[in-house]
Length: 71
Image (tube, rainbow, N blue to C red; front, side):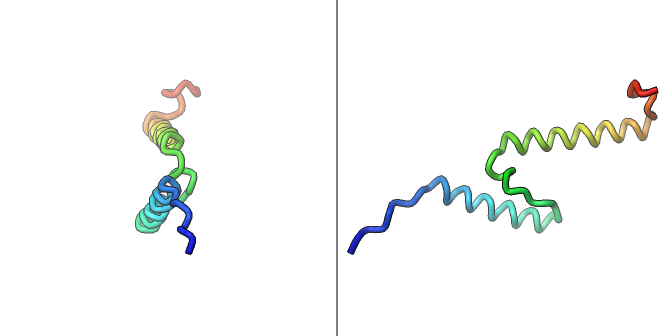
């Protein structure tokens, strides 16, 4: 009987992380993106970008476009 091929620990960990992210996304009704699981730096950059856009929108609502240099 031949021995099974050695397992790739990295791919197993990635699959587990992806499944956990899917569960978390379902629980929070958030859109799931598998790329976020695979590249945490890209996820952090996207999150920061979303936060900045939200902050700019909030500032525009509070102060109007003149405060942001638009008028």
